[in-house]
Amino acid sequence: MDPSLILGLVLAFGALIAMINLEGATIGSLLIPAPMVLVFGATIAVGIASGTVRDALHAVKSLPRAFRGERRTASSMIDTVVGYAEKARAEGLLALEQGLEDEKDPFLRQALQSIADGTDAEDLRTLLEDELTSTAARNRTASRFYMTLGGFAPTVGIIGTVVSLTHVLEKLDKPDTLGPMIATAFVATLWGLLSANFIWLPIGGRLQRLGELELERMTVLMEGMLAIQAGAPPQFVGERLRALVSERSSARSGRRARTRAAEETEQAS
Image 1 (cartoon, helix red, strand yellow):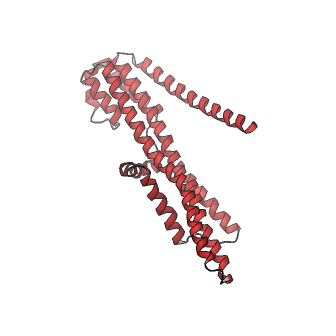
Image 2 (cartoon, helix red, strand yellow; image 1 turned 180 degrees about the horizontal axis):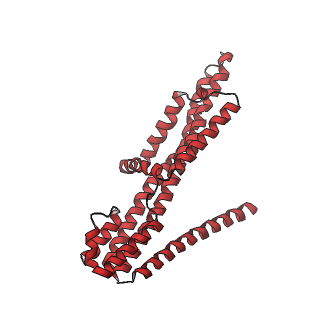
Image 3 (cartoon, rainbow, N blue to C red; image 1 turned 45 degrees about the horizontal axis):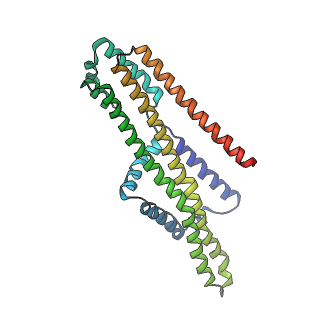
């Protein structure tokens, strides 16, 4: 389990609580039901409206994964693939079918079954690449849903503030109550910004990153299984997959460097 999301949220809300205490305010002044109901309820509602019910349900099902994290990485699967390569080398490809019941990874289990069934190399690559494509689409749907909520939440908060300020203007004949009412009105904007940056966007970003790690793991498994089917030696399979993981890590670092350089150039101009 990777606790980064839980740890980050705890630290973020902890910093908020610390600020409230240092300012001499109370948490209760922020926990006002009316703006919270509007911000969370309307944000989720317009998020559902911007997609399909199926997208929303898939995003909800993906939520535990955001807290749990990716249990298997690409690097951790290399030894497993090498083990299957050694088994195939010693006992033949049909022997791979013996490990299907113990294999927990559904993608790897599908590849093993296809190899044992004698699927052609080109057909096997097509089958596995199609699975990668569909997995990437599912992952994008889940992360995009929470990113969308993060985009809607601040605007919904502003709507709540405008509604509350309209109510404040109706009470101008009672100046003693204007201060607390105005403070309450801005709580909606606060929760819009807070929920977007402390909840929805972190969850969306986390699911996006987990999706990238899953695709990396599946790519390593696909290349490893294809190499095994082609009769590659176990040592070559291991070296090939380690190089593949290193190449993908270097490519990600290069993309980040290019992104930072572009941002610095834009700021300088």
